[in-house]
Image (tube, helix red, strand yellow):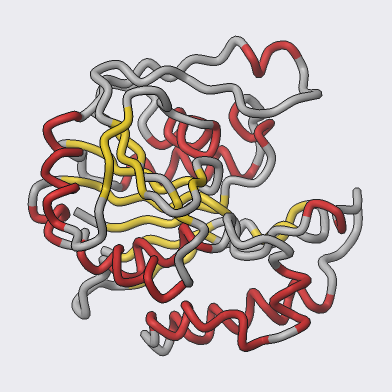
Length: 252
């Protein structure tokens, strides 16, 4: 299977017909149908532990506030993938605990409802342990690579640049946002994937691009699981609200 990173941006992309959601649907049409989907989302974070959801019917979590009522009625009733989640847990050296309480947060379902609108593919999530340094997230991604041979689509969902406090309507992207986005793009085009874990070396630019790390760390999972034979393809290149990079990529 390919590996995929999707810049999910605003929850409204789930229900709006815009250039981002249309591209998600186009990309979904180009992907082989997975046996299961593993999503690492910016919106399931833990500290000092890693959890994998093993429920048979993950709930649709509306983990946001202040949006139109129509967004809260959305459901993505994909079945769970407990057997694949158990297989995943046996692959990684770090201890992973089984969870039955979570489900699918909006970092997962808001994109999957466009990529795979039938909601018929078993899907599970892996939490982000924020107590771990970025390089350990990359290593976890590398340990997940055998899942690709089992038909699992590994999806990271976050944003390459994500600073909510700096959002501006109808404005061009900040210089620091463009610098951070371009730096990662250069690393990926050079296939220097592990260097993506060193993003904090950019200092103030990195701190502005990511005041907190949870939207960046999902980038490292598909990069870790990538193969040297994979071809890199970007999509949804550009910015939303001046401080959200929507750049996404497939490695296939």
